[in-house]
Image (cartoon, rainbow, N blue to C red; front, top):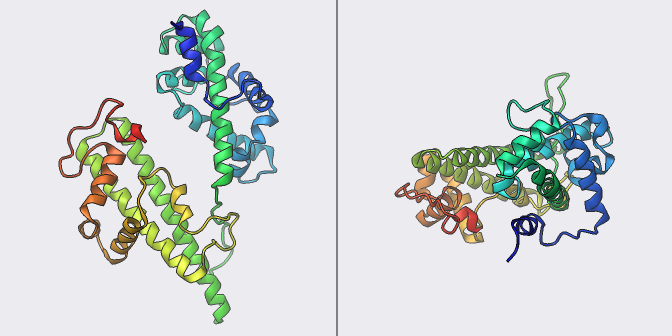
Amino acid sequence: MMSSTEEITLMLTPDSADPTDDRAEALTAALRKLVRYGLPLAPGLVDDVLLDLPGVRARATQPDDRASRLAAFDGLLRWCLARFDDESLTDAARAMFGLPPGMSGTTLTQRREIAAAACGHEVHHFRKRIEPRLLIVLAWALRRDSDEYALTRAVAPPLARPSARPRVPADPFAWEAAEHAELLSRLWSGVYLLRAELLGLARARSMRGEPAALVAAACTALRRYAELLALTGRYRAAYGEVLLHADTGLPPEGLVDLAGWTPRLDPTQRAALAGAADGAGTELAFLAAVPGEITAGWCEALTGFNPGSATGLAADLGTDPIRKK
């Protein structure tokens, strides 16, 4: 029989983590420094090993500027704490860094007491046994984010305040350049519209929103997804298999995956959605044009509800479609 401490250690250690990995140890040590004062971050305490993570540099608006990378790391740290890998210890991890409302500026002793209570442990046991493992998991999440983000990232076109009304010369080359910039802007607009819908739906689901409202939000996300597919098809037909003038090797349809997690659909289903988006003027018209099994599968995967009944949200982990994935 394993002790409770051994069980927690096994639960918190990522399967592929190597305890002798120098990079992992450096990240953990850097996070340990940040825990002393918690959030908001003290810029002087943030080690370069954290600011030089590929995922941080990729998110920074000015990767060579330390302040820009600090802002990017602050957002990434808060995001990793908000979706901590082990939900039973999420509240403890957040409390350790002073993330919950009203905890900003509290002492380490106060944060440890709240964190220990959140996961049901005595403070001394938490400090000696649980806290080090929380930092290891958080370091691993930051490292995994960088590995994934660096391979599948794309940067939206930078924006600047215009100094005058835009003017396009009466020239075919200028028209083509403007047309490309317009379609690329519509593509990125579609990415962020879908991302907003998916984030809003995830938040509503975590707050146990009404079934009908969740299904309606999922249907709106499905339409945004379909519209983005239609745009990527237009881009591919006009400009080929790679996004032009973009810092990425992703194909146009690769932008769809950057918006957030969506149920896996086969090429035939994606083509059906793109066609429905192209020919629909309203959301009702769009949904009427989409095969019912696509809508049902999409809604059940994102909400746990069938759009025909909007009842019976799976509460246990064994039947929740999101947990299964």
